[in-house]
Amino acid sequence: MFDWANQPYNILLLTFIFAPYFTSSVAPDPVSGQAIWGWMLAISGVLTAICAPILGAIADNTGHKRRWILFWSFLYMGGASALWWAVPDADQTTLLLVLVAFAVGMVGLEYGIVFTNSILPSLGTRADWGRISGTGWALGYIGGLISLFIMLALLAENEAGVTLIGIAPVLSLDPEMREGTRAVGPFTALWYLVFVIPFFLWVKDPAVTRPARGAVKRGLRELAATLRALPARRSLFAYLGASMVYRDALNGIYAFGGIYAAGVLGWSIIQIGIFGILAAAVGAVGCWLGGKIDARLGPKPVIAVCITLLIAVCIVIVGTDRSMVLFQPVAAGSGLPDVVFYLCGAIIGAAGGSLQSASRTMLVRQADPDRMTEGFGLYALSGKALSFVAPGLIALATTATGSQRLGVTPLIFLFVLGLVLLLWVKAEGEPEFASPSPSSP
Image 1 (cartoon, helix red, strand yellow):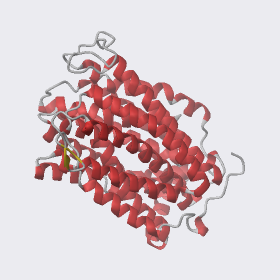
Image 2 (cartoon, helix red, strand yellow):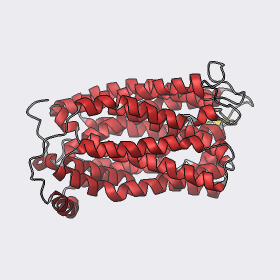
Image 3 (cartoon, one colour):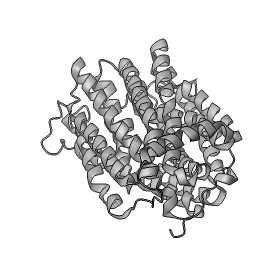
Image 4 (cartoon, helix red, strand yellow):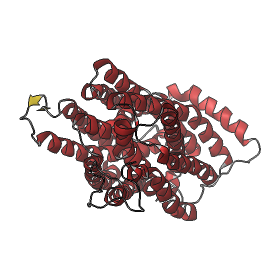
């Protein structure tokens, strides 16, 4: 249910509703909007990377992970709610405040994920981890799908001022000021507030056997020891390196997919939303199937296949715009580019969700079972240490070429590098650090 509660930040804000709206209507123009959005994501990623392992190490020693998650939840909801102030053609001050608010919410989202992921090993046996992770991610996609449909049907307006079902935005929201679309921020915060309740009611903190006294100092000391020993743990080291680059590339797709569709294909918010519905629906099924395959074959084959599919998708996207598909010209007014991009969205949904689900079960296999939050803190660090690379490279390539289409080219190289580094990862982790099954699910 935590996945269900937090997914709208990714689907509604980061990918399909708010980001395209920001770059097309709030920023001065789509190209500069894509560039400054990229720099904002890069900066928020660095902020996450700096503290995640430290906080994880402290949490492993002090316990009370739910209290930490509650704090991150306030950041999530506060940052999301403030996006209401993203008025069209905003002045520089408002533009900056909106970017800061989005970054605050992203930090809350990312830290919350670190702490909840670390609870995964306590929820079932080793054989159950893949199924639990895949099912959770599938539920997240379903929650994202439902929230996206609600936004499109009742709130987000198109250029004519009506929603997907042809009505004015509900609650007497002003379509000329894009209040229906801007409501996506408060709506995302409210969704989280309601649906995170089952998590706090029924998911318990894993037992902490260490004394609480001196926990902070001990946590920092053990983190330092873990970092010093990391190069000797070759499988974990290689996995953190591989996931660092391929997750960064995946986040680049999520962050700029809707922006690309708005700027290159000229899609409206409604069209981008339909694209998101398709991606989420196929993604839910893909995550569920990926979890089944993970439970049967392990996470490594799932990761490798998903990366390969995403490489192919990126090549198709770079070779597609209104005038061509896969670098081949099409007739003016052809709907083929739209069809191809919808298909790409479906593959991104299935492969991207399965990749993230399998990645967290792979980390559970690699990490020290007694230092699981610290392990996911390192996982967040590896995912965020270079999180500025994908958005930064996209921003740089977009600025240098003046083309949104060519701006996403760097993602291909990041995915390829991640696939190569995966060769050095042991599928079952290192035996001396294998996580035992809990005595009771």
